Image: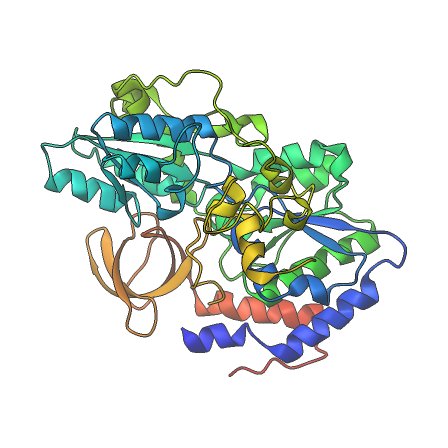
Length: 363
Length: 86
């Protein structure tokens, strides 16, 4: 695999594509492209790709961190379950995300049984091994993760495990961004791994209805640079369309089996996103026939209104949509650091602030 | 792989299937790192490369698809440079 990776890390190619980007970029306009994936932001920041682009071409990070956008109310639900003597299993990233009063890590410090797992399958195995305990899996994540939850629900796991479903869907969030006129977007870099599952079709509306160039791109620095080049090319031709740069992983139909299983298990409902509010048809819920596994129904989870998504002074809600850079928040690396994060964007390894904290970038 | 040092929710990592038992497979993430992953979501066989996300293979990667990326890049650069196939 090492050899395979090296083929996608060719410095000569990078120099050529950067030169082409500079040649093609408009001289006066200031095109702004948005990606919606934490891993894209990591590649861009880690490899300093923004410094390779012309100064008038901007790439911003949209709501691509599945941990950052889980609203405080849903962290509160997980905390409530953990404090009620259930074993809560979750991805490591979500442990420190603040709820209204506490995070799952705080709950653990108070004696709650909270376990980090690599995937939902490990949570099910734990439940099988310990039939006397009640388990909950906190199912967060976008379309890359939701199919794995669907697989386990359909296998009818033991009755002592249920699922707190907080999955979200990416295309509805992209629609929200494109409709925010003051964001002035000129192109989308669509997320590679979400697209391996959903395919290209869900993005068709962006060029068709909104005239927005959309390119699905992979995660090597060259993938992102070629993605930027392809969008610039579309802009220069005044022909917005949907293109796939990540052909080595994304088929136009996506993963049909994963889509089928998701449809079988989940229905699409409106969803609350931290800092963004409610986005229509952007969340998943277990269908009626699987509701025995719905932790919200099983344990009658009841969170009082008034949960706090964004603490005072924190500008995560603006960072999440790419309206400001982390460096434009007065808390960034002062009172809000990876060791003591204030907002969700500093907690998750995929959060824009956390990624910027390691790279000391200003662009 | 660019991002193996960051544990990210939307990150998927390629791995080679070493053996298969029912719905699960032993995969090699490179440098001898073996792990069991679930392959329900893909049609994969031993020696295939799969993209693994949170313990589940979500897509099969083929040599042809890898070549297709290099072909696309070359086409974009209008064959200005030859890709060094190390």
